[in-house]
Length: 332
Ligand code: FAD
Ligand code: EPU
Image (cartoon, rainbow, N blue to C red; front, top):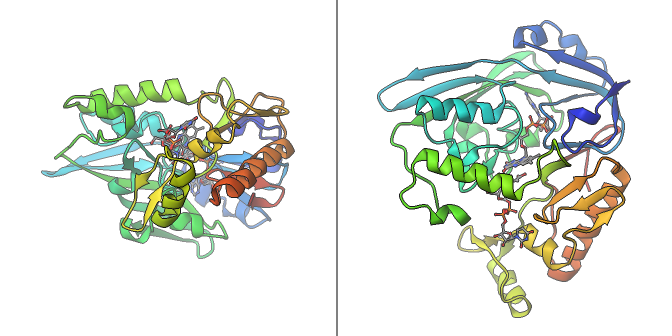
């Protein structure tokens, strides 16, 4: 049995039957037999996976490192190995004067996991910089190069999430960052910045995140537990009869996005606890584990939130985190 408690930022006590850790893609390719002997789950830094039970299978981690930069007239092409830490890459780029990732500062996790849910924050999504995602298809044994348009990126979504057999191992990501940098400062507190530089945005994002989001080293969490739901404009109009101050962001002509944090907050969950599992007192969308929580308590609280939001607002919340049960991903 392999202890997983420290391998996921939510920190629930859990174990796996087996564990394989590869330092290079070559090493992984030479040991494909680990994928042929039963259930497996690829794991990065475990900041979007919550083990709600003991996993009856093998955890596989690929910690390959390396950042290669090529420059042309228009921009920079970065080939980054999957095991690199995302925030370390953002800092590397800032130091080299390669700007574009600054809004995505301080997002935990690996570069290899970043395309899975198309990480995003403060008005920017990873997808806009992705040129290719290099993967190994475990079913065919072939290396494939998925171009940006084949990745089906959406809000916290990509083709990789629709890969039910979990058979694609991302081993590197190629980004193209144009030189014609423009500040993206239309989200929340970034609006207060006057003609910000990339460094100003980076500093502000780091400051906001440190204030608002709990540090997983201090209290177990996996960032936003639910996605922000899409709501039709008609539905929004009816909700506004009862909730005049409901915040929303325009998405297209027919739909808007409503902050799940607001819905959960309005129902009084903020600061509440179910055993060792809590709804964070500063950010209602973040569920936490004080170190004594259990998978069962987490599911009880999460389902309670989901049910009450559905009853009160007729909105169904979808989990953003990946919940892992005995046999693999489970739904709420
Ligand atoms: P893991 O949790 O280890 O894995 C996530 C998924 O990727 C799993 O399905 C796993 O099987 C798969 N996977 C991992 N590596 C590979 C690989 N090499 N090949 C194929 N599949 C793989 N996310 C945002 O988008 N925006 C935010 O602002 C944000 N803020 C956060 C704040 C906090 C405090 C925390 C804890 C999380 C936050 N997240 C945010 C979520 C998380 O940081 C991202 O989803 C991140 O990309 C997960 O990386 P990871 O390496 O930890 O992935
Ligand atoms: N709000 C409340 N109560 C709260 C917190 C927020 O009412 O306790 C309301 C406020 O109206 C606020 C709005 O919710 O204006 C949005 O809050 P915030 O700016 O904190 O962002 P969020 O919608 O909760 C999303 C992402 C985060 C990302 C931030 C910044 C999702 C599911 N979450 O959070 O991503 O960092 O925006 O872009 O889209 C993650 O994916 O793990 C994550 C942390």
